[in-house]
Amino acid sequence: MPAKKQVTREKIVREAFALVREGGMDALNVTALSKRLGCSTQPVYLSFRNMEELKREVLIKIGEFCNGYLLERVEGVPPYKAMGINYIRFAREEKHFFQEVFMKGGNGELVSSATDNAIALVQGGTGLTKDLSARLHAEIWLFVHGVATALCTGYLELSDGQIGELLTDVYKGLTLRFEGGI
Image (cartoon, rainbow, N blue to C red; front, side):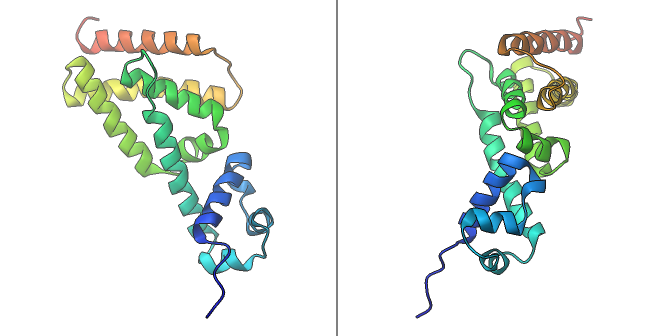
């Protein structure tokens, strides 16, 4: 009977995820991963055809992790605003993940899914048509992404209170415009 595999595919992905979290995708290589796993490079090469396959698995795991961030409830905050707050928090707290997913385009499926959810929240909260809700969301998200990117790169520092006020101002202003008030 062959020996039981000590380093599983799941363990490799978990440790690769941790490496990327600490140092970005550039930190992920077979040598660093093997060292972290405490094994030779052979288990990595036996589990994945190449590094691109491993990176795809890591991006899927990052996407699932990010999705948890975006959908987390914020007490006393409407769900759509909470998404914006959480997106900015993700950029601030998980810089390498944010860069891979939202600045380098690493997980289009996550972005598409989050956009669909956000548009539904806007439509439900405003009563606007789906098309107008999509336009409103696109304009707000450009602002939110700009703030998140500025925080992620260290260009800007804002308190949670300032972020909340900015999001409220942008949302109220754009909602008023799309509802025909300006």
